[in-house]
Image (tube, rainbow, N blue to C red; front, side, top):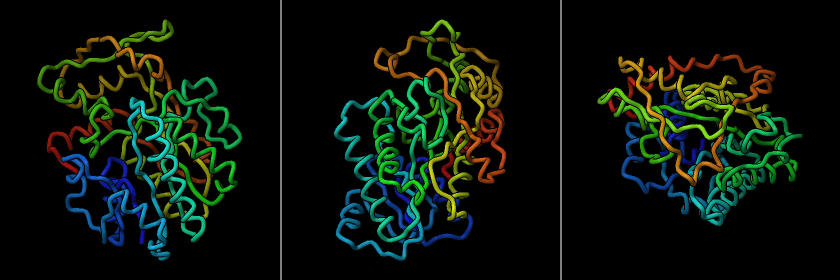
Length: 321
């Protein structure tokens, strides 16, 4: 049996779909269905049982979770970067993850968890997933700090060699429809681009970056799931790894890919960035992917145009995978 937390969420539901594709239906799923769109991510999925995240935590703490579990794939967390409730992030992201990890370690169960590129902060210390550099990173928000806290806990406890942490960069693709303000730009802008032929991008507030020339490492959900499956299939591998493409792209290039995918001529308007985002905005992210390649990962990552084009096909169908 495999446990997937956050299974009705973005990355989790796509992992569940992939597990089903390879014939795995012995999946126990965990989530919190507090959004009318999230249940749609479970449409046509096969699994043996569902737990609300609070009930599952109690299930684990009371010793009722079967030790027949092969792996816990822990994708459940609050991924908002703008909430100001530090206590909530600590309980929901850090402490919850620690409880599951301790259970997995005690019962010799594989544990794969979602960390985040938000741990790298402004990028002043780079984007390397080298364990020796973990404590040098300074996240810019409570979300990133909650992920950093668990990475540091696993490092201090000496257990990174017994689990896998995945630092996801800017993942986008089907099944993120429920994420509100945390949806990708492709999804946020799709309707306006399709109907009005226009896209809005934030202005830059750093002279070294022109408007729309801020860069992010955008990775398509199918590629991100490929990496998760690689670690599920290779149980001898452990440690923290970046999950990006290794190639930063500008917002302007992402926008151009979307215009091309919907058959529109590019028309971009640059707008003011909300004040509350300016001090925590990442102007550049680019995953150092050498560590993943060094352990034998060989599957190429899709180019941005291919990824956006594929995503638009789902959007046209209003499809959930």
